[in-house]
Length: 381
Image (cartoon, rainbow, N blue to C red; front, side, top):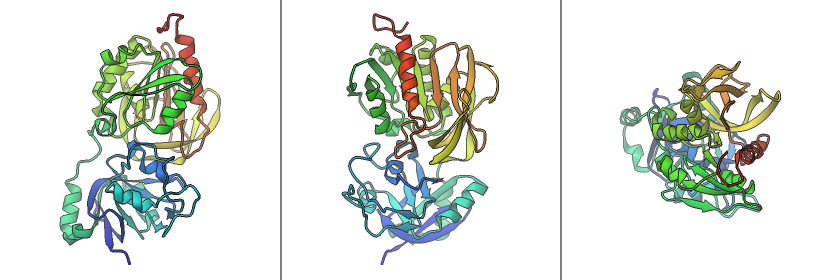
């Protein structure tokens, strides 16, 4: 028999279930993820820092956990809510259970709740602050639990990149013929992204989130890359300023997810918070240049504010820009392309572990852009 647990939302909704993983109290923004597979990749994606993740797929934990599929050094979610927790994993690659890893990383889980009912609440009202309470934290009254939840900061205004970033530069060697040094600002990068970049011939230098333009230039990089990550892009002005220096220098740039939002802000566009965001591995996106629809992996709660049609003038003075991709679900901007400087970005995850792989070609596009920009002396033309 498992002990009790409860998920409390800031609107007063309460969902009672069973405790698993660590016991205690965890607070954060409650969001839902629609992927039917890849829960290990979701849990270890640094973009989920500060959030309690509700899985809409009913059966979670079936395939256990392993050492190969982790996207970072730890689980980052604050809490984890599932409907039916598998009593034991059944997969030849599994080395331990989901609960083992949650307990090890101090993540409070709740099972036995109607996760689709929770999702309906979040879709109607929007994502909201919440808390998972188990163990001694259940001794608090419902009123006190709700007060604790409502005292939790919202995601707006939070800069969380420093929390998930590397503390010192990490270097990953290029695979195959080396193209040059790629400066990567680690805002919450996933290991699959690092692998895809190295596989294109980049010597990947993963820098702390607070790295300066001087530190970037010291590497003599052939390009700059901004990763995915958590938090509010409006609270990342330091990273925006570094990116603007790179754009002025016409250093080739590629950004994904959070990096897309920061490119938008660097170009002079605004960003805003979505009602409930895009989180899952089944998000349809239209590539305007090809007319191709790609099913993409996404995890974001903020988006760039820009017109979908026509060629735009960068409000920050970087020439012509166009929205290159947009969501077929709700017309959210899903990609930006600068027309006068070598820079582009997408709002989704082209590395897409655990799938789909529709957008993996974007890493090739980035490599081609860099090759076209590199001079014979190794600098940027």
